[in-house]
Image (cartoon, rainbow, N blue to C red; front, top):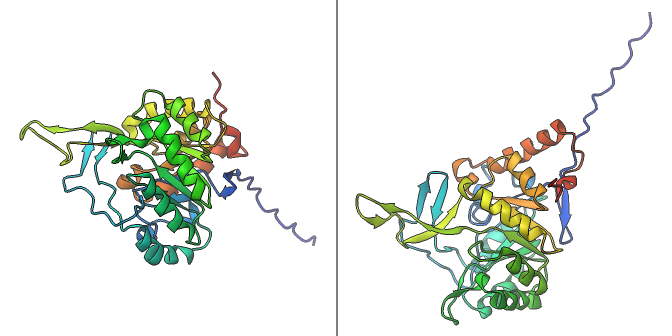
Length: 317
């Protein structure tokens, strides 16, 4: 009796979801956005950090900050208002308490978010982070007021933006990603300013300045009166800004703004993004980033996309 043939294993032909820029190889383009993942350690029992492309820490400042008084979060029809006030433990506590625990995790990419209210603040935090092992890059939040120049937002003035980026680049030992504010007249101009100052990549968009009012009490819903709007409501505007920025500079662009599923990721990549950050979606679904990674692979299989990088800037117009 003839022996039965050994069945061949099924061919898997899985798509290549990896992307590479700034000398860093990300296993996929899905990065958890700053402010929505704590310092990484806080979510390790919920999310498999090694399944994501990477994650960005909460913004780190020179000294610890308590943030704004409540109420500081309000859900809107298609998004969320937040005015947390950049509450954080400070760069030194991050290096001493959080980073050692992150280093024990295998195969994760940590991007440290940096902010300040003067050039010296950015320099101090960046220099301190240079000492820490296990950080892949810095993301510079320029949506902060320059307290030494009348409170003008760094990211809303091209001259100040170039100054702060060049300041950070002069001391940074890792790639510098500049997170741009959308509250500007021309995002292309700001993207070019960041690139001209030496940014290795840019990420956009940060939140839009907005507000909500309680008609019954005649008071603002947020103690700070205004707040940052994020979530699906801003996605069409964010997509347009990513498209404009990507067509204005030659450095990589990380897109964000209302991403909740794999199709959103594809749209941002078609607009020119090399990767994306997912933020507000983590609040209504703590494992949103993992689900998006899984669904992105299935989308590529269904649409016969062998390499995710083939989608970058592939918009047909």
